Image (cartoon, rainbow, N blue to C red; front, side, top):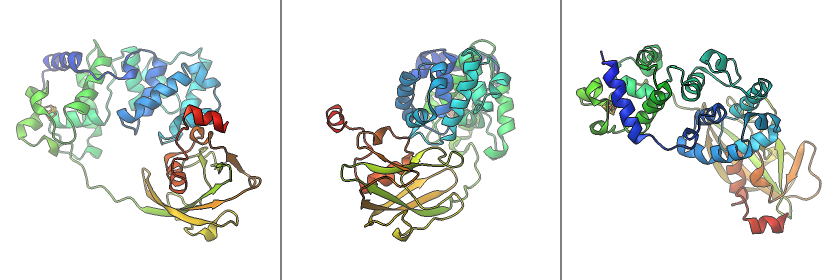
Length: 356
Ligand code: SF4
């Protein structure tokens, strides 16, 4: 049994001198903390920071976000992946704006909002409102698995880990405690080569005594992801504009922008040759790109053609200086870049002026 008082004291003292300086930690604004927590689901901290800063500059409060169009929101989110998060963000902002911009303070109240699950509700309740919520992310799971040398595979040990965390959370500074546990996992108790000599919890840790902390958390072997195939067609006009279309609102990458592609899905391959092009043109092979989604990997053959005239029904021409602002998911940016290197990068202010 780990003595709770000294454990918490050591952890919070360490946090006082070692907390990571992250932009969402410079505020207690629930809106900013909520945005950061949604972005951090499935995305690394370093990758989130520039998106978070741009997003907060564009949508500084929840009313502002509620008033934005979905396409503006998706464009600000493009590149972060897992786009259902962005659509839930909008649905949630709409509801909170109706509550005069006030977020519920309890985990139960927060969980009623779209896109806020158990983890996110606990994180917002603890960090923004200092409620003693048990916040359990992947970092915390790793730390607790090691502290207690939990031999059950992680997928089956979630309830046990949560029970340990619930027993640890202090009534004073629960928000700092949650962030300290996350920071410890991110910077000291790392998946590979944990730095136990620097760890404020080493006296309490059973895994470090065993001499093999990396053994925890115990994981079952991963199933290999299926590989799906398809083709993407990048049509370029003589002024450099690229032909795009919007994906259906529902499903994978729903509502995002894409170049025409064949009918690949998470379960089925699409056609892979230019015989499946959406219209006749002099299609030339421009390369192949790969992208890994949560449940499958995708390989797209990319074709390029010079095309002029009006956009076919359901498509539109995106001008050179507009392409970087389109809601293009990473897989579509890769396809365009394979056909036209540099096309999805933001033009410099001088060239943007020239192109406008
Ligand atoms: S002593 Fe090592 S294994 Fe244990 S919690 Fe600290 S860093 Fe992790």
